[in-house]
Image (cartoon, rainbow, N blue to C red; front, side):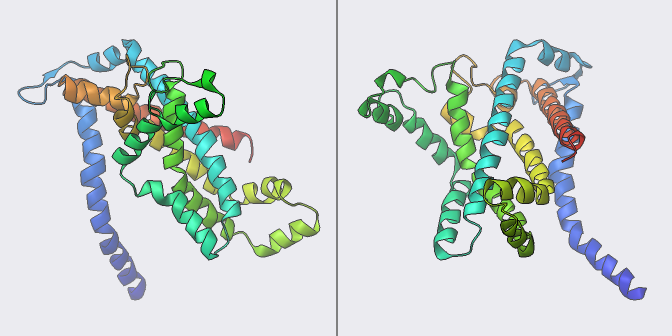
Length: 291
């Protein structure tokens, strides 16, 4: 019993620094943000209590709803783009040969490259005059497809979704490879004997066995997509005419461009609420389907 108590004390001491850091840099700012969401505050000087006025104003603002719609496009693109691509690549690259390790590193590389660099690269790819995408389309006889990919409000959200997907496949690839490697090899051998190969093996064996991992990945996708900011801010700044505005850029512009810290705090609180609703909804949906 004394050994168990010492072990528990050691675990508590080991976790305490991380817990303190999480409390100071995550929970306290969240509470602070919720608190100032009820005030009209410019960042300096006295703050005047306004109750739910900031939240009501945000919910009445059409730009807020446009930003939410754009964020939902990013969420859908991330779930339907990042996860399937990462899952397929994890099946292809799960072996530990030199070639497979090299390709895995290449796929993961965007995660260690500065987001500013990625945004600038994709900005040049989409450039209407010198962008490589339009040059390729012109050279292969698809000149009618040439667009101002970031300036056309009808397609620019889908354009910015591509670099978001490309830049974030790496972590899910590693997560899925780790989950697939934990599937007993006997199950794969038995599936092959029963004729369950390729698509059948993926659908009947792999997905059910790693379903809990997929649910965690979906949660990470939703939370990460709702916090999306840097790539879009570098590429478009939320424009033109707020057509690529996201909740994070909307909050940033109102907080640091026009110095409405109280209003920006209210918007950030709404982002947390929307994120929780989407996460809980996705988990309930998957549970109801009994997968």
